[in-house]
Length: 483
Ligand code: PFF
Image (cartoon, rainbow, N blue to C red; front, side, top):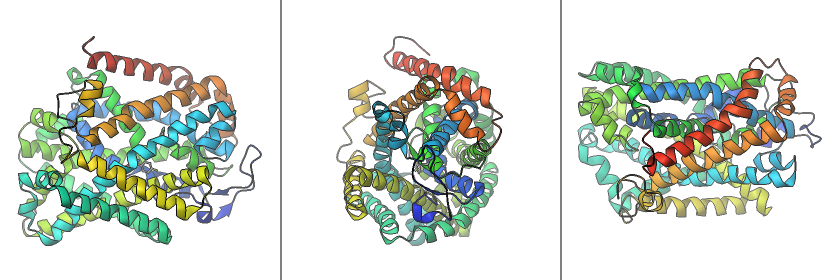
């Protein structure tokens, strides 16, 4: 759920200076405003849709453990670096990097390319959620829980496009009409409702026969499940979910006031975002095991369709209330996806606006065209282009036709682009501008308790880790090693 994407008009208290000698820049009114806005931007389909299927696929507890370790070490250091860089320079990604020399602009450009890859497929999944929300109004819950429902919908041509276009239209309308602030206010309440409902559904799901096996699978790490692929997947998910390595947190940091505690805010955002991801897993994975029979079955079939296949079955358990529960739940997910997509879309618009200087209307038109065209292409991957498997043809990954275009773009952003951006950011901060530059920025407002962790992570562990894990993953995929 993204809200309060920082815009100048959104600021309540103007900052005196933007840092690094830049002109005054609008800023967040307080620490909590920043935490809420950034946490709400972080919480979206990444937590609700993506985290559960990856955890289910990659051994449950083993994935969860690696994920949590990554968030509190690598994720912490990177989020500190990005927000401090933003606050120091008072700029978004491209400007922030080039503030230290034109040649570093490339890191900002690469980071800015990531939301362009993510937004179209984010909108496609947003369309799926919209379809489910609407279906609970007009169809019996039993029909939606039918095994054929999901496939019948995404594989057939017309309807899946219509829902995606509707979702995109909602995003663009909110941005173009400037009613974002209103949506955001509603969103705050809805986010709480989503958490309450997810807890209730999790408790209910745990009463299903077989669910406790699923709970054990999700919470108890099985060390035999560790693999290079698992770690790569957990790392990509961490970037996606915390909105890292895509320039976004630099922009957020640039609106942060000079006297507010960065470290505390970063910890809070991580806690909130990870808490919701863990909760989403709790709601979906034990239920998936109950529905499908065994953790092995769940692991071998888990993919982007997991939540859409499993939750409708769980909702059937609510008997006469199944439709109400299903509608409410998907409506809340819809808002989470909508607000996050609005934040992504605004990011695209501001990048195009900065680059072309042709005005906001023009940039909105360009970005809308872009996501409609790209979203259509991704969607074709589930029907007319089903036989295209770029993961297999380009990278030799998986079996022919077991990956769709969505998997390809997801792979491109999460497994290739974001690790590269994260690596370059670590090298830039650790070895070029030096950690001290950002440490003194952080210390302007508070003590830096985890300063040592920050330095060691940024300079040594994180960059080495990214390289080692990517090399291991590539060698493993190529069959050179078995990890
Ligand atoms: N972090 C969001 C999620 O997990 O769904 C995705 C996202 C939203 C990324 C907004 C970037 C952004 F600006």
